[in-house]
Length: 201
Image (cartoon, rainbow, N blue to C red):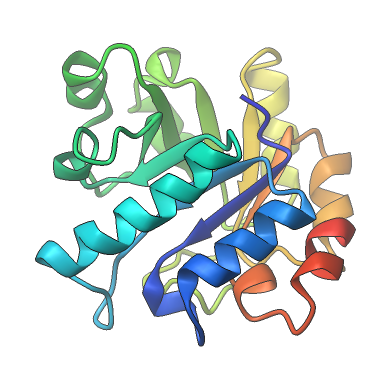
């Protein structure tokens, strides 16, 4: 899975139709998509599933891996390629046992989380937050690209994606630190020119 330009998005991140935004982002060159419908303004129930199906269809059409954030009930109906979990989400070990053939992403933001997590079960690590972010209300303190460097030393062969506050102005510093890719939300969903924003990441 090519993690280089990783878009995370739900309706709560969009000022216009999420399907339109995803289409523009795919045209611009994103390499993987994560459906993250979470927060006080997020869709629930059938509305969430309906949006997920539309976004899934678009990813299938253009052969973009489709990852579900945390919600295991969506994995099968959306035929997701993988699941991403954070430290406060579903237990990574349980997710791996339930879906042994799916990609598994795991967020880690400090050494304590690394020590208590089944890193060996994850197909890739989400490292961050790199910088201050307004896209996630409960985001932790920024750890900076140095965290990527530390993880890379400890896990030289494990794919790592930087996440949190990344935009076209600081993405290079994350890649230079040893990341395999950068994950973004508002850098694309709030961009006036999505094509230019993705190209510059």
